[in-house]
Length: 106
DNA sequence: AGTATGACGGTTT
DNA sequence: AAAACCGCCATAC
Image (cartoon, rainbow, N blue to C red; front, side, top):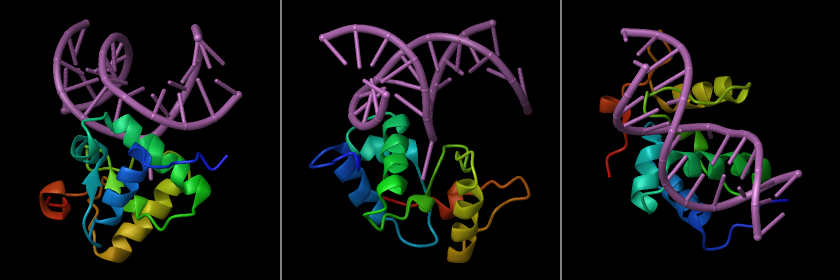
């Protein structure tokens, strides 16, 4: 378990996500492109294993999909939204975030 | 070692 | 415009 991540895409993704400033959000595809052009799926999977281990303080909440919405399915989705709203991110009535406004600029 | 799947993204139907 | 499909790469079984 723990999905040992040593010097892998995981490590790089975590480092990048930690660099996201509060109140800003990023997309899986964006991160994937920065770390090495990997598909957003890889980023999502990396973060998915992250919440399992929780051995890292990665603000996975600031990572959303290209639609500016939360891709999670379970109760984690509500948690993510709550965390983002707490950081100042405004959600639309549809639960969509304005990436043009809150999108993290590299 | 091979198969199945996943917190996505872009294209096609 | 919305839904479905395929494709990308890594992790899990």
